[in-house]
Length: 203
Image (cartoon, rainbow, N blue to C red):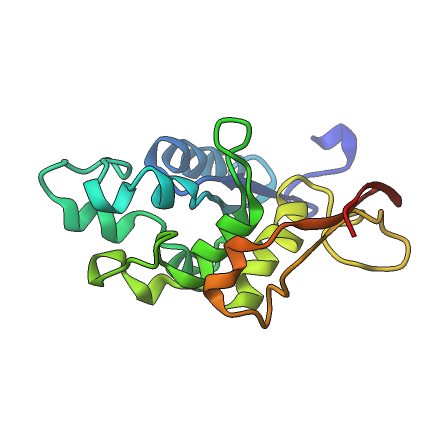
């Protein structure tokens, strides 16, 4: 460190990113603590991936799958902690939209719908689905664009439609910001552009 010019008077700033699960977070906390003892100014940043497809199609909420490390006989604890994206955002965590493809179907409109509707594809929901965790459309859009680019260290090139960035975008048959919520998963892609090149045109 000293040979690179770092020391007590010039500490190297570092950000350590981790998922918000104990198996990831706890070692990261120890790592940050150790770094700060050897001339680093390290801080911990939580980045969580949001995948709603399981909740909708595999009925995670219906059967209370044990996804949060607590007992299966305590479904309220499971459901409260699962898919708590609003709470994570409000805590300052970076939440990233994803589809779990190719494990899952990889349908971004289903993921977006689940984030803003907090219902399954038949429109079912109840108090156990914790509607207070519903995201606004602007929040959901950021998860799949700005935050996704940030999580892959590509925010300088991707995530927003900005002059000088790569033109990676998709256009859909429904307006995600204004269409009735129930119409969102019924939409389909009409245009896909990758690095400025049209790779799909269904108009």
